[in-house]
Image (cartoon, rainbow, N blue to C red; front, top):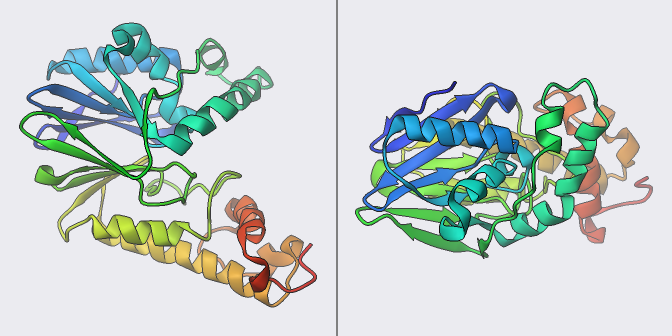
Length: 284
């Protein structure tokens, strides 16, 4: 089972093969904050076992960085273990999206009998965060504070980042990914993501350590490069739309920083999100 490794003073990260996912603990005098809970009730119970084995304190808060199930379906295990005494916090949009779209994920697994995680996902009860915020929130751990910031829309509408100022660590959720290109899915905001990362960069120092949602920890320079690549995607889409290139032809017409196959949904989403003044006919 994955072990939590101390990345900075009382900031532990465990890396999980399923989804190449990172789960983080932040410790203080009051106890532990758990950031993200994994992709099923069973996986969440494994995380709780790992926390017990670490022996660093009691869980007092749980945070979801966004609504996607690999970060939230483990909520069930924490609710079963601690009840409502331990709140689950997210951005308000993330809670709405999980409530509205969680069943889509369960159906996706129901339709794939060969997936080895199918039974675990189908057995999971979707637990929606019970404490939400719109812009910022501070968690007081006694001898340190943990800052939750919604920097804007990007990977989803409800992304948040978690900043531990005294350790100079920032947990970026899936606004930053190290082991693959950023996931621009059918709920992403490609035209806004670069500006969102500008705000994230404003929270970093030259020596900050950034924990992405997936992959190895990175530095500020990595975030800057990923922001630049996302900026290229946004500006390429804007240029194509302004020149009247139809959305169906945009992937072939553009010069992209990643394989076009990973940007198909991003291009369609972005064309839908562009204001009419930035489009020329024909667009479809």
